[in-house]
Image 1 (cartoon, helix red, strand yellow):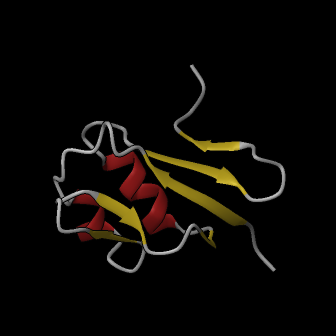
Image 2 (cartoon, helix red, strand yellow; image 1 turned 180 degrees about the horizontal axis):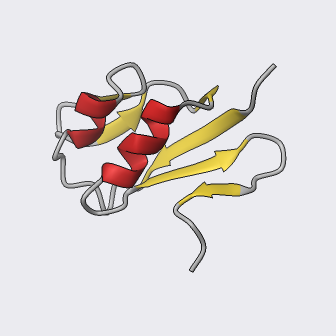
Image 3 (cartoon, helix red, strand yellow; image 1 turned 120 degrees about the vertical axis):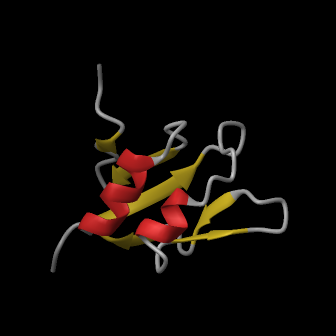
Length: 77
């Protein structure tokens, strides 16, 4: 079994660019307020999800390992 990620979107930062929904349509959706949400709070680790987080123009997506809470994205400065 592979890693599981907890994915969160900071609604105070999200500008509704929908970049995440284009890169990882199975992982993100926009609500009626044009704010992004993960389709599930926990999901299998995957390149598309990481690419969506990396491509977010305002870095509103946070990914951490389920269990340990180790941050996958954004990288620590």
